[in-house]
Structures are given as structure tokens and as C-alpha cells.
Length: 390
Image (cartoon, one colour):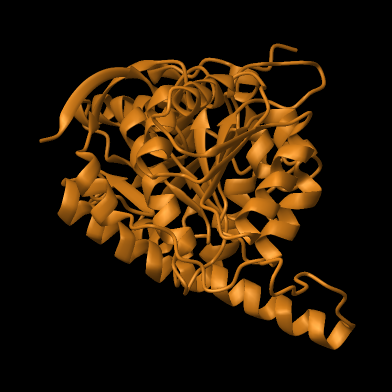
């Protein structure tokens, strides 16, 4: 029988890693991720998790250890934030290219400088082209669920790609929420023991990731991109199976009151909950507003998003990362590019909001939606920044 427990979200992620019977954990502390690997160290020390727990001297070393343990056939996990994720950058490409199914929790935090420990999405958006599957949690329950699902999807022989599960720092990671914990037997049935098809073995030495001339490299990259795109089918299967087993169905894009919406709000992460309240309030005022919560970032769910906005007059995109010198934030750029497939394109109004952990209130989302009616299309820059006081 499932248990419902009040638990800090970071500890819920650690609980999921334990229930997944993870074999190897590479750990280096960085705020606000540290609670995850601290709790996992306790599990390992107390014998609740029989895993190789490997403390290292940097995040670069942590992700390098993950490459080695995963290549050796171990179910592998790590976690990081902000500058730590940036320090991993070089190895993230290697893990994805060598098709190693590492799972990593990214507790999102703004990148320096200046030093900032609060949450935005600048850390993960700077890694968006490294070839990983990228998921976003809105709640503690989603953070727990997505961690289990990440192992199942990553290790599927049709996928064999690493997965990042993103959890907003402090505003989600350090909040105590009601988490439904499934029975361990049910988890083991959903997520069986990892059985790699190929792994490093001293008795049968092989090379992986070795030198490739241009014509070979091109074909490998084509295969890698195709695998990432086709992982969407496997993710759908995993979500369907998880829903049947545990009663919670996850989706790439979650729609809230968009059926007749003339204005659609779009954002990612834990702020989706605040945006939902704003949409409900505006609906009570007679405004036809809906919300799209983007939960899957890579592979990008263009079809789902275009289907949802095809009848909208306005799309208000709220990015929590700034793509310096570009024509918008990362989410807005992707959505606008995909929208050229539509017979009738909506009007896009773009905001950069909540960066550096700046609080986003219900009223802020209401103001941004109102901006869709009063603002002209901005050209230079094509977005407004919420919270600028100059």
C-alpha cells in the first residue's frame, strides 16, 4: 500500500534513487543540490542502499566517474546545480554521444556572475544542446516520479541516452510537500534490474568513443540525433505504464484551460503552479486565458505545443533564462521557430522573468497576460524583462 509522507523534495529525489536500486553515485556538494547527495550518503552508510558511493573533488570529476561506472554497466546517478553543471559541460557531450544512460538531478540555480544562489533556468539552458533528454518537475511528486521514470527511459535499449531531471532550487528543492511513496515491490516491477547489452569488461577489452574520421562522425551524430528524437515514443510508453501502475499520468506538455483560450500563457518549472492560479483567477474575471506547462524540453515537443496554440490569438511565453544578444529567451525561440508550420501564427509576447530567483507572484503572471493586449510587438529587444528598475 502506498504511503503519503511529508518530505523535503530533495529528500524525495534521494528516496527515488534508493528505490531504483542504483548501483553507483558520484557526489560533490553544491548549493542547493547538496541535500540529495547527503541523504544518499546516509542511505549508503546505513546499508539501506547497496551502491558504490563515490565522493569526488569537483563536478567535472563527478560526471567523469558517471561515465566510467555507466560504461561498466552500473545504474548511475549524480546531482548538481549552476556552476557545477557548467563545469560538467565537456563531459555531458561525451556521455550522450557514448549512449550512457546516466540519470542526473539538476537543482536549478542562476549562473554567476554576480554570485547568486537562487533559482532560474540559466544553468540547464546553457546545456540544452549536449544531447541529453531533459525533463522539468513542477512539484515534489513530479520530481520523485520523473526520477524513477528517467532510469526506465534512459536504460531502454531503444534509447540509451542520459536524462536530466530539473528541480527549481529552494522554491521546490527545499520545500516540504506531501509525497506519495509507492511500495518497493511495485517500483521494482516497474523498474527491473539494469541489464546492459554492452559494458566495459577487463576480460574483454574494447574501446568506446574512439577516434572517428569526418564521414564516420557525421553518421554517428545522425544516429544520436535520431535516437534522441525517437526517445519520445519510449517516454510516452513509460508515462503510460507508470500511470497504470501508480495512478499518475505524466505528459510532455500539460494543458490547463486552453480549450477556448484566446491567450495562452506558457512557462516551465515550479512557477507553473503559480501561473495556474493566475489563469484560474483571470477565468473568473471572464478572460479566456489558458496555460501550457512544458515538462519535456529535449526532445522538444513541437507538435504538442503547436496543436495547443493553433487557435490562439496571443501566446505569452515566460522564459526564466536570458539568451544574451538573441531574439528572445530559449523557450520563446524554440516555440516561435516551430510556429512557422502553422497555417495561422498567433501573436507572440515574450517575457524574461524570475531570473536570479526574483519572485514571481500571481499578479505578475496576470500583468504579463495583460501585456499581450496592450503591448506592440517588441523588436529590439523582442522581449520585456520583469523586475528591471532602471
